Image (cartoon, rainbow, N blue to C red; front, side, top):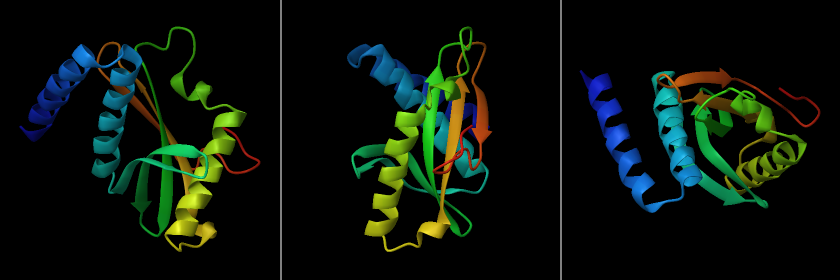
Length: 142
């Protein structure tokens, strides 16, 4: 029952946002809402949303056991041309790395506990969520 209720609340919230926000902003926020709930169901503890620092923004900051996880959420209405995670390019990874390092520095957390995940969401035919754990590091890509 709660899953059904959460989906209903998400749909109503998205409809309200779509009336006043640009379509891409509303889609991005809906994806963040879905990713937030998805990660919480996996046991992650979300501690920040849209955290800004170090010249970048982190969509979700979470704890997964002993690791602080910076999560980039990519949402698309379809994957007809490419999967959403393909848009996490080199420049985006660098910005996320700078923001993640700024976050752990400000929170006095060891950089060795920092991890970067990507959650991609395709909304056609109901949301399809893919979680790319430890998606990249300074020299590693998806």
